[in-house]
Amino acid sequence: MRLESMLQETSELFVILLSIPIFYFILQNGQIHGKRSKSYGKKWLFRTRESISHNILGVLIALASTKGIKLPLKDRSRRIVVLLLLISYPFYNLVKRVYRNGVRNFKNTSYFANLADLLFGFITTRLVLRLAGMKEDIEFSENEEKIVIASATILSATAQTMLLM
Image 1 (cartoon, rainbow, N blue to C red):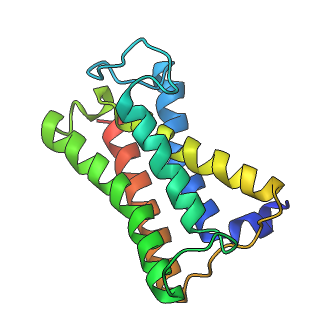
Image 2: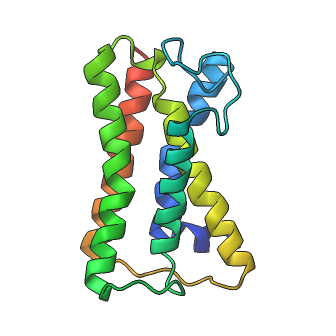
């Protein structure tokens, strides 16, 4: 898949934007867990029940955003559900970590590991679906696309800014 066509997919652009602070964090710290994370020093993938639940959420978002998967929702309702799933957990995770730890200690939290779990479930499921021939995604309206991209941009920029503090 060429980069230009990949960037036309809203969900792929969302994943790329949210991955930037994760990669930056790993480069800066040499691991995915913050020092205040319960999983500090442990392996990354499938480390806790919470980790598995983040992966499952990523799988559900990927399934819901694939046109070939039948759901008992009309197109507009399905798009809204996917939109809410895409943006709600990353925002919740960000707010929770800042509230509990403060801006200065944000880089020591499990924010990046949790986000990586979610993205791993999403990306892995998308790859499996692509290999199974299900290549068509639901199509967001222009305004919905703007919401998804703006949300990912805000989340990415906020996380990167807090890493610098």
